[in-house]
Image (tube, rainbow, N blue to C red; front, side, top):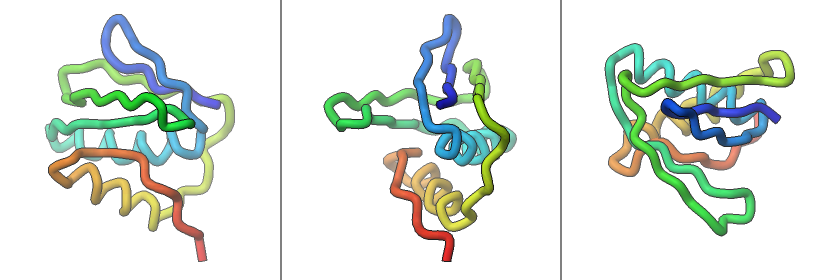
Length: 98
């Protein structure tokens, strides 16, 4: 289980390393282009949802407990599509690799 650290002082969100790696790639690509966007995440049971504004001015840090996982290009594209939508980046289910 890795962690996404947002802001200063940081708020920490514990996330699965696999999900975290995909989110990192999407967020960093958008921030390299100086694009700000919203990011919404829900607790595992769906009881609580939080939304935040991600911009090049806000500190982000990704910490992992395992090596970089294999990247699912279909999932990465699905996440990019949400990040580019009016609703912003949100976690969608991972499609199968086949």
